[in-house]
Amino acid sequence: MNRPAYPLSAEVQARFAGLAECADKRIVADMAELIRNGTDRELNRVNVLEFAQRHGVNEEGVIAAFVHAARLGLFDMVWSLLCPGCGGVLSSNNTLKHVHQRDYHCALCATAYEPTLDQMVEVSFTVNPRVRRIAAHEPHKLPLWEYYRQAYWSSGIDVSDEEYDRLVPQFTLAALELPSGEQHTLTVELPQKFIIVFEPVTHTAHFIDVQGEPTTETQEMKVAFDHEHTPVPTTSMRPGPLRLTLQNRIETRALPSLFIADDPLHDMLVEKKRFLTATRLFTNQTFRDIYRTDTLDIDQRLKITSLTFLFTDLKGSTELYERVGDLVAYDMVKAHFHVLNDVIAAQTGAVVKTIGDAVMATFPTPDRGLAAALRMREAMHALNQSRDGEDLLLKIGLHEGPCLAVTLNDRLDYFGQSVNIAARVQGLAMSRSIFATKPVVEHPEAKHLLDAAGLTPVQQSAMLKGISEEFCVFEIP
Ligand SMILES: [Zn+2]
Image 1 (cartoon, protein in one colour):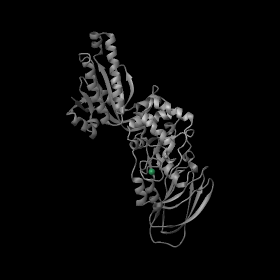
Image 2 (spheres, rainbow, N blue to C red; image 1 turned 90 degrees about the vertical axis):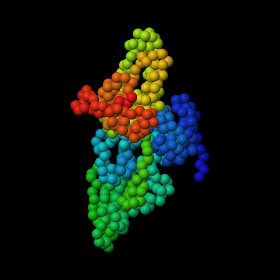
Image 3 (cartoon, rainbow, N blue to C red; image 1 turned 120 degrees about the horizontal axis):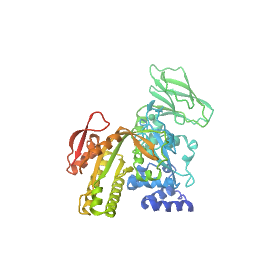
Image 4 (cartoon, rainbow, N blue to C red; image 1 turned 90 degrees about the horizontal axis):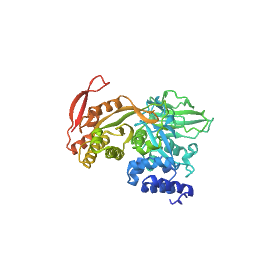
């Protein structure tokens, strides 16, 4: 179907011109094109990794472009908590500050999950209402199945429109829109299956385990929807007629549905999409530069199950000042910071902080951190060569592990034993050898890198300050 392109106001065009100044122009053109010609659904909670794949452009560039676009008011950043089981959105907001540390309960899965920034928090981007109005800006007016598609299973599940239209009728026994404060009674014939009464606005569920001899007698049940989150009850019933009374006690409409927990429902939820996690966004330098402190509340601590830490320290600058003089030495130390920043950004990492000549950086995966470390070492060699010496020595340490994301000293920082270990491991480096821990060198992709470079890590055990047991570390020659 051909729709006329959505017109962009002069103000929006000016903002796009501003965006093109600080982001990849090709990506910016693709974003403008999406706003002009995309469907409403395509502009709701844009999955930027999917966007990068569809347009054949670099993921990091797309993340940076959308972060800038959010700053310019073209898109709004949406932080959603996704259920790892069913891919449903358990909570969604325009700030991460609403995510709490307590467990999130998914009614559809009847399971509680501790929120983690790398497995459960998705960051997506919705077009700003002043740029273009889309139906999802008023989710409570979306047609029932569009609400499920765009607000509940928004960007977490990977199902085509055709599959969605084919599977929904197969697992749905009934579904209706129930206005605020109203009650409705419906009669359904219960098949001998496991049935889920589910309501996505309140995240309420009630399970019906249908088994035993079929009956012709009408069974009765009542389910009310409110904001109370109780454990999901299970009622046993027999195959046959059910008179089900549904009661909406919330201030908006409710969308109660009866699902058959069988293959078609499973088929729809099984494929999960790759999505931009909060952790990945935190390791994007553009995001760190723009949202320095305004991401987490001062007392908020959120779990990350895996993050790769790289610490560097520069040695030899004193001797260098002695040999070549202050000016030249200063330029070289500055050049070293430039090199480090470039290498870190190229490997999808970000600098968390610098302390004197030391740098702390994070990466989403160990192989990225290792690739950066190897590249840094080469770049330092080239830098020294340009001055006919080996004055500057970069000592590098790497570790991967869980941590907490926190706001500390006005910056988004990380806290925990993994951070301490990474810093201590860096302290073991005495020469150009890179020191790394087991989770780094045994990461499959990192192993590939080492093999490709013909490097064999040498295992040794070391005492790390503040860590009681002997620690296994690897020296990468
Ligand atoms: Zn779930």
